[in-house]
Image (tube, rainbow, N blue to C red):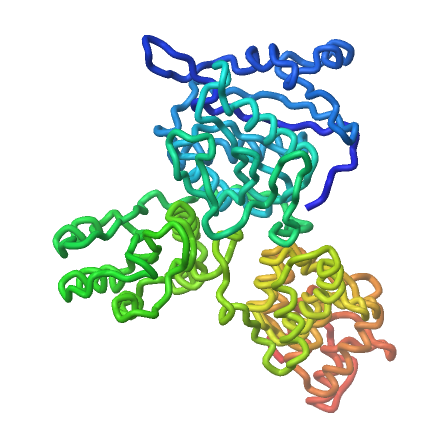
Length: 559
């Protein structure tokens, strides 16, 4: 989280509909268009003098100067038709995400004006749809239309614009009643009061009063050097099953039938459910045929545990603990993970247990790394999970390259993925100029190389000795890694190619066939001459037949 330094900050406000802009027709509230016209008449939303002086476009307004003399300009993108939030689906939320993607480079932040009834679902879903987010996205709305005399719409919208305009908060948030929440931690708790939302298991990210109090220790860190990614392949066949006393196995069986692929099951207390053998059998059959079920508690606060036998019975049949996730967040996470076609079913289940977007509180036993050969590195890695202060951020940034290189050297995917989740940059080099990709290529760890490339690491980088990851793989004879790097665009530099003829002849003289093939796979010409004017193939035949000066038109495959 950082306060902006620019005097002018441009935002995009996406108006999707909702109560905030509604008007009364025959005693019934209906979506109302032209929100911009209403905002233009309100001085707190429109500095008329500035707009006139700077000839702002018709769809853009300027807020009055902030206390820090910053100017916030916001452009309103109004949907046509507008949506009642009760009609919103994954399709509409993906549309919002794609509009953010199209305008991502033009604006410093985004405010989404949305109906309150499904706003918790929207903020949770968008937190998973928008990957590698480095800019502020805030949802807000109102319980009472902004046109009425006494309403909460003005305060909520103005607060959302000010927070997005003054701070860089790289996550999807929800602003309501002077509080900024993490979007995937909220649930709607009141249909009438202005304090309509709460975040039961995570304090607000910020509280706005006479001063703005920011909870720095809660802020997610931006994914550096990564492009915004819109995950539009969300699984639609997911649902919520709320257990209640007396629910029958027949009813549960009916709910779990195809095309259903994933279910958030709301249970009692700390994750307990009926121990009815027939009901447990239906759940077990569903998980065995590939159904993914997440166990979340009915309770507003608290977490799912296995302290009771009733909870142990559920966990023992393959049901995944939802920890302290809200049902809204669990449903969004399930939709995102099941939509990942690049993962196996087991990998999807593992991913569901991990904290991906700040949606759950990792248990102490989950805060582990697998660098088991270094107690010091384990301690540092655990420290990095605190993610709390600016000082700790500086410590983490300085230690991350070394930790990442150590993990890559051992092919430790778990630690590499943990570093990514914490916002670490896997492209940074250690004190010797080596990047994690150098170390993974040197060790021949295919999975680590693929993980690093997937996370945007540069394939052509050089360490302090001007060696590339591709050269490391060649020297290690790691042919699978060489092919992966070549497919990603890796090339040996002119400096690395100097003297390769002599090196190839040395390999040929020692009968190192694997070494020759590795160099050839990296794109090196095997007909190069060494210091004595011979090619590697001539050396091969001279070694095998006791002759020299043989024709060069011989293929290595015959060797």
